[in-house]
Image (cartoon, rainbow, N blue to C red; front, side, top):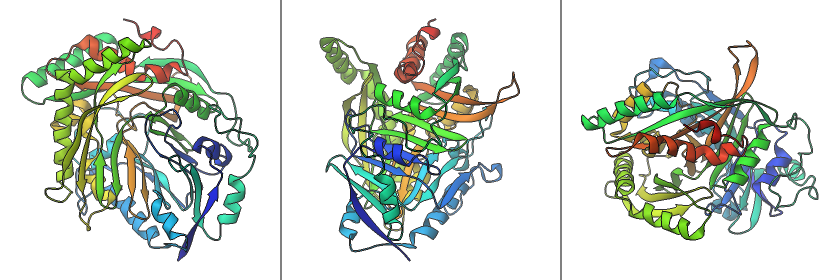
Length: 487
């Protein structure tokens, strides 16, 4: 039995602690975006997983239920159960009980994990080989609580002294207010400066996007579906340290579910504003975003835009459809009668856009856990459409490549059963791929932008929305991004 304990660390941002620890194996940062993000409370930093998780999709198990969940989630559940029984809190258990993460899984869930949960076609091309679950089982973490203005190191008692010394190195080199910290004290991962060797290119031309949009409208008018979330992908070739790119993205669009995950040949850079599923003491919360409007630098005009968004019949109807879908998903796993909607069409404002956000809650039975909740609801309904399975089928037909991390999730599942997770929008995937022209390995960055298409949608405005949603983050690393996509 491994004893867990805590040490109080100086109150600094997760960015600073990640800088000090990112030379270790498989470092991860779950970043609340503080102080600039409008919500969020905790930053979580971890490294050196005791087990790495790389589960690839197995076609043999596609759409087959294994103990009520898919094959890869079943494997993850087994590993979590195996390790969680080995950890026990010490005398500091009161502090531990108040913290969100006490060791456990941190990683990414590909949108294509849904292929193991439902029977879906396989028309879209998989071209980056991202595992459907990628991450690690971490036995220690630094947790920064911005509400209490405290930082805690949670670790096995026999490692606490060593890890505390690592966390305390170079304390005078970076200030908490720094938006771009100085290089980490180890040079292992601070190699070349980040830059793009080739700018972002879309996988669809405007005529191709319009033709696919017309097909979606035909499906909607025929009664196949009510809404389809349709996306295009932007892809660039990069070199150097993508951590620098993440810092620029974060400065441009601070968001409460940001993250930087470094899994060697795959890195995930996310500035997502959207929660997927949170689980605390059997209480479930999901907060779907549907309804988006670009912000204005003029305060009066910005307020006008926000009010128009809140009053928009189209956006409210779109939001309500997804709320009903998520109520149904939670109803599959939560206690009967426990699913509620405490907030509908709430306005949340971010650096570049306003969003309409609703809140759906439920209560999980004692015999169910975080993995059961994921299996019942993955992928998030706000980024598929309705009805969900038909929408996913149409997405697979019309989007040329598989979504990989886009519209999947970044999640932690703690040994104590708690979970929080994001919807991975506003997210970049860095991967090593063979350049078909040179035959050489290159670092590719992929980013997706999409939106919900409904009966009265217009192709030009929907296309423009895909650019608006990712414009701010991609301009942070390619200033002429939007200009390059003028029709």
